[in-house]
Length: 353
Ligand SMILES: [Zn+2]
Ligand SMILES: [Zn+2]
Image (cartoon, rainbow, N blue to C red):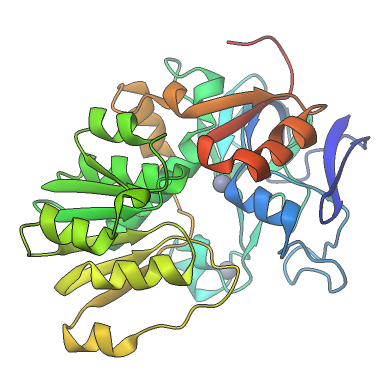
């Protein structure tokens, strides 16, 4: 089968590899569409999470391996000891790999497993014609949701998960810093959870229409000081909740300054360099720090929101490539024009739909 195999930084090769077979408790999915995630981009440019020398603690794998974890497709093979799934079922999956034994796993919080891994990072992933997935991580795609749109459910689930961790945002003033797909997902989730007012802060105006059509306000960083903008927007009260969806020291510092006393900071950005935290700024106002890691079962909710039309998944797809053009038109395009894109899809097989 054809697959995108990670060998090293900027070294993703489209190769012929062996088709996986379904081991007990697993299925093999014929991948129809896949999505390039921020994680995949990180793997492409480094620093990588893909193990190179030391085998991963859970999977025992090292590079080279097939990247990608966001996908949709049709079950092609069902392994032993599985009920409820059959060939032909339309599915997507949570790419989290977990041990099933640690305390977090036993409590259903497999996204924070002590031995956590990810499909496409620690095990062969979904940028391929076939991918093997644990049946317990599958989600059925509703009939009303095209396979193309269903790929968006995975990144959108991150926002739903984070909103739950915050204990809700109803009636609150919410700021989202960094409107990539994770920030946009956080924005949608906060809107659907009845936030009072929403302000999204980003670079450039690519997301302005999306945010304003979704009932939020938008501030372009090139227009001045974002903390001043939040102060004016909130009539001096500052924000109840701020989502950091960038992963930089500057963004983090700005986010803290936007929070009112007792306000909540939700960190969703992935930091390439470990930031310094102004702890006194938290303590003085009893501000609270939250973090969120992927999701557990929220893909089902994301699919339901796409089906009901609450989220227009199509509008989030900014480009479509194939496995053959993944590097030149996908990864390289993200490096050159990243701010233009929300989600680049890979059409792995079949015609457009
Ligand atoms: Zn993802
Ligand atoms: Zn575990």
